[in-house]
Length: 198
Image (cartoon, rainbow, N blue to C red; front, side):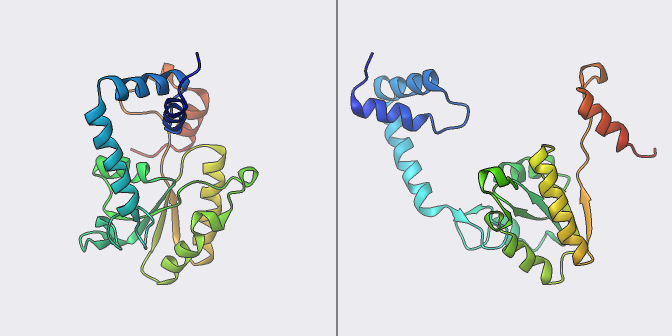
């Protein structure tokens, strides 16, 4: 069945969301137009307001409404520790763990030459400027354990090494509460090679 043009446009726009396929987008569009018109109006207004006021922190590139995000503006953070992550969602996950009190730098992606993503697209000039200030002592590499994430971590480690800074990689391995028999071989191999003394 062919949808009216505006409905088809709405369905296609909803497909831009991660994990939303054609059926889910159609279901969302139908709900918003059938039963959720007041919610749809609020969603549209909130989205428009966010697009106008949410930018990136000038220091770490995290989402912010001010020149500096709350983390960079805080005097309670450890400025000698800088954790480099791929996305704002990674910052949220690390912050929710409650185990880190340093600052961040958000790459907004990872190195991917096939997709045209090089160091300049990841804000390396800004990162190098932060490192050249002489405050950071350790670069914590918290990129994803993918081929691209590992290549990005390697590139960043070399950047730190050239400046005489310590670089560390977050550990990857068996999750807490997980059972070894259900862990994939690559994760288990990494957990074994990264074992620590007790």
